[in-house]
Each structure stands twice: as structure tokens, then as C-alpha cells.
Amino acid sequence: MSETTIDTAELGEKIVKVLKTIFDPEIPVDIYELGLIYDVFVNEDYDVKILMTLTTPNCPVAETLPLEVEEKVKSLNDVKDAEVEITFDPPWTQDLMSEEAKLELGML
Image (cartoon, rainbow, N blue to C red; front, side, top):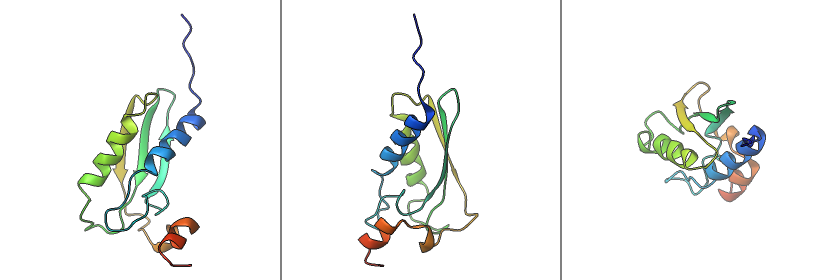
């Protein structure tokens, strides 16, 4: 029986697609375009670690949003496990938002 190998870059693209389905409840923009995702790591065992931030340390979804991210990423068939690490270094600013997010919010 041959084991199929999964392209980690391809898996990374699938993860980004999933992240783009998660929205900040206070801002009508997904967390990826909002700039809340700092990095996505995928190792050879298909364990995923996501480094993300929140718009503020007192964000009302500080408890639920990271769990939603973990659960949705874990739901991908190719992902063995997922872990979210929250950081505030560097702190989130509007400069981290994509052009698409700025346009959506009327900031351009």
C-alpha cells in the first residue's frame, strides 16, 4: 500500500481558505484579510500551528475565536492536529489589513 504525500504548500492554501470563512463578529471582514493571522506552520506530520492576534487584548471573542479557528482547521481531512497561539507582539493595527479589507470597510 503506497502512502500519498500531501503538499504542505497546498495544505497551507486550504487552511487559508478555511481562515477566510471566519469573521470577526464586530467587523464584517474575515480574520485573514483583517490581518489577525500572523503565521501558519505545517510540519511533516501535518500538525498545524497558527500564530494569530486579536484586535485588542480585551476583544469580546478572545475566548471563542481561537477555538473556532482550531476547530475549523482541524476539520480539514489532511490536518492531523491544530493549535492556535495568541500573541500581541506586534500589536494589531489597521496597517495589517489587506487592501480588500480596507476597501470593504470604506477606508480607501
